[in-house]
Image 1 (cartoon, rainbow, N blue to C red):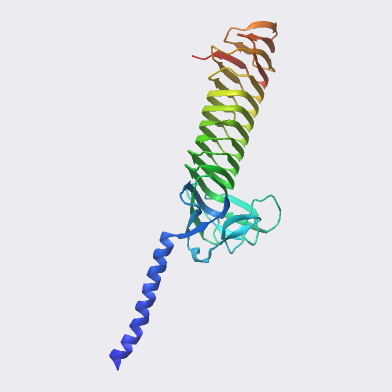
Image 2: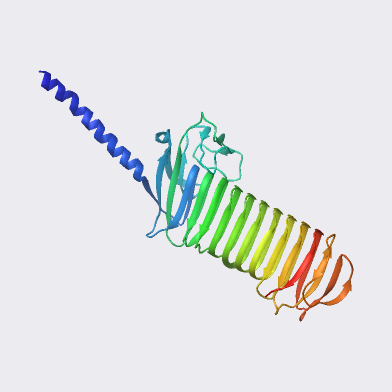
Length: 355
């Protein structure tokens, strides 16, 4: 009698342990979801999104939940506003999240009941994400495999986004997250509230709107490069683009090995250094404060008009001067076919011969 009772007790316990073990393995491996269609949007409030090159017909997403309350997260997918979506649903208006990079920050945004956000409207519930205890302790890490030719939209509030070797049009929208892209082919559109941005080996048009945080651009080729950055220094190297338009609030810029037809730069404050690798049709610089240095290649020809409020003008290249004042110089370099205009409020202007 005692032996039978013991067997009846042990059997369900063993079964429960087996189920728990399977659930643990499934959670560690992640949930895999296929999303059909040519245009796909991904929404995740907290954690990470890693987009990589994929194969086949569908975008596939692997979802790995983490944190003490990870089991409360839901994953929903299907069409929203005419495009296929995957949405991680967080059942709380307060979320606790922090690591070495993000601990101590606070982000507030509005989230719709279906898990979408950042779609330029004020609908939805107010959600706060911070390192303070007492909120939902859960986040999701998503790996998104993108076949060539797809249009992908990645939305993340707080965490990290990476895009690697994706061949297709990509847009990234984050509130407080670092964004890193490498080896993309197609248009690249980034909208970041705060966080560092790094773009490397991009083929296609690039449009970046950054609230705060450093910007690093390396080996970019395309027809257009547009950057609107609130604060944080911008560094660029090996850029080949027909039209470059940079609007920088503060922090300044260092641009090396730049090949462009037209380059326009508006910088509120911070030093500016531009190294031109080839002749240019138009270089137009408007700097509020901070020195401006332009490295001129031997083959460049342009009409020059430089206005410096304070700091002086230093002509380190041969210029046929037509007007010379303490704070204003006009003249011609080489054949005079292009145009160089520099308006500096404070800080010197320096033209240097490129070696």
